[in-house]
Image 1 (cartoon, rainbow, N blue to C red):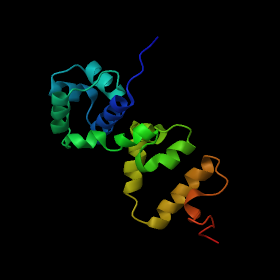
Image 2 (cartoon, helix red, strand yellow):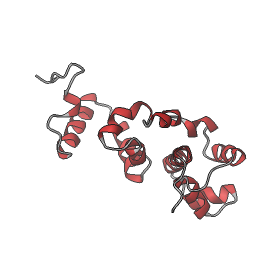
Image 3 (tube, rainbow, N blue to C red):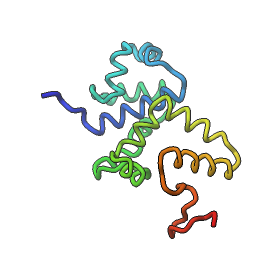
Image 4 (cartoon, rainbow, N blue to C red):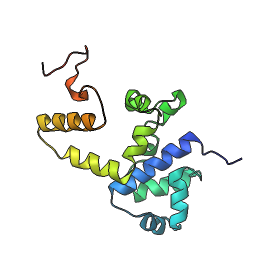
Length: 152
């Protein structure tokens, strides 16, 4: 039977991947900075291999973040949720779905581009468009806390 990576190891690895991609760094470049092969970096990012404390410190210095960065949201994994995105992730059918998507090239590119949009009305319309394309009955951004549409 194949060994399944520990959820915390997967979380830490996904945070390494997310930060590396945000910096525009390849697995090969990170590996060179750490004295590792890109394959070892891949194993860390997938959670297949656990990252030791001294190696995590080295990775945090290379990626210019504190070691705690890699554990942000990890305590929520004990409850089967992923931080403040728990409700959205549960709706997607998996607690790690949203964080897994954000850690991809497409997720990071989408998030960085979306964050550069200054007009809140344009942002809302983009959310409505994506919800519509995803087959949602009602645009997500148009629903208020009490369930009424904000546009009515």
